[in-house]
Length: 594
Image (cartoon, rainbow, N blue to C red; front, top):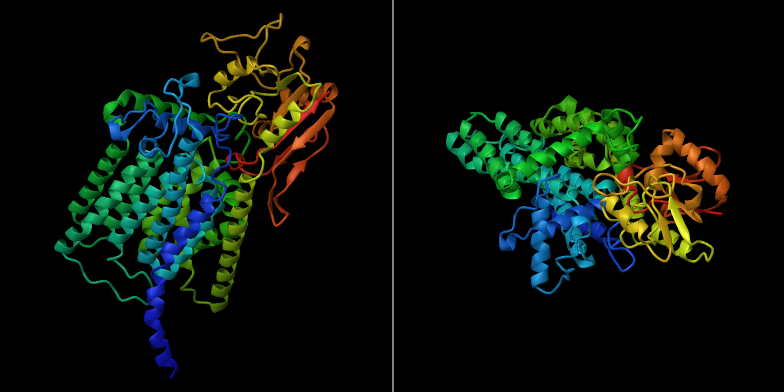
């Protein structure tokens, strides 16, 4: 009786199971749409608080695939994201859904996106981020079975760093989408080599004719690898996963490999036609980025651990949450022991990519995002196959806890995006003080400063300093070098010479001074002597301090504590122990007055 009942329920289960990937994608999209209107431009702020958004969308406005304009003359990243943003924005304009600024509104030479243009680009990031879940599910299903696919897709859907950065109109969410697509098609090719689960039947032997039919999957893996490189150059390393899938084939024929390489070249050319249209600009900007990642990013990564360690103990600790990170590390160990063909395919991409970002001096947490699909696929693979039942149960319990913690942290991060930003709060507070007629800055002003001028989050600091110095009626005194007569110094291009932690001449002593966490956090972490001297002097002249924070909380409980440490190191400045690029949405501000 029981056996018959189970058999009768099997078709119903299978019919429901096909909706699982769709439900996962919808769930992931919901998390990525919650708070997506964060810090959109308005009359008080012309730019997003995430400066990379303004750069990406500003340059995207200069291209229009519908009109054949494909060269943004900007290649710090591949141009694919810019082309897609431009396509969506110009199509939206044509449909009357997106408004635009006048074509000649280009502060600092960069087009100024409207709120609807920026929102359209963010929506595209959110869609690509959610779509990645579908590819991750499909890859897990092919390599390790349906359960593995569900677990891997769910993990990517709730991973905090992936959820947060899919809110931004930047290149990162899209790059992971193309990487995940390439892994999926490599898995389609490889799924004919070995069964996805120990209980699955062995695949049939494939002759030369069968391999030729399967070669189209390697071609598509190559196309997606090329598109990944066209979104973010190092994403092209995912082509190595396709090469690994080809290497595992028997017989090993040259045609599938040739199609993989051809697909990669085609995908990159389609996504980054500047390699043909404007090769000198590509070389110029790629050289700049290579120099940047090898030399550092100001104080942000000074005196931090080597990238190989830093990405694990700090970036992934916050990007995944500690429980989910532990699960991923255990799963890597399990894969090293079991050594399935699918593990080798994932490792062919993940290990070289990890080596590349581990060697770099710039260690943003978002650089780890391409590792998320391989990590979560290994988690799904480790769900089953344990010899010891108790060990398997313990691993599964830890994996569930990891998923819950990741979801909770993602929700908490999303909540910061729907609350008033500390920079807006601080600006309103300063304007409410009748005795404050001038404001100074420890650095900048820039995107980490109170919104006292609509242009303060412009992505180019020299432009911001020029515009800030002209602000009226509230006088803004940018942190630049001054001559003995009180006049600001200028460089050979006519821009004000920026400086940090420099005490202003007495004649320019402002009524209030502001500090932004995204600036001061790392300078004080390394106990910079000039910063300590500046704070000590400013504390005497401006003893009244007011902090503005937007803490990461869940159900009213702190998820990331805000520390306000008194004493001569911090002087009560609030800080949060999160990666720099996870603080864009809730950077603290402190206002000091006389």
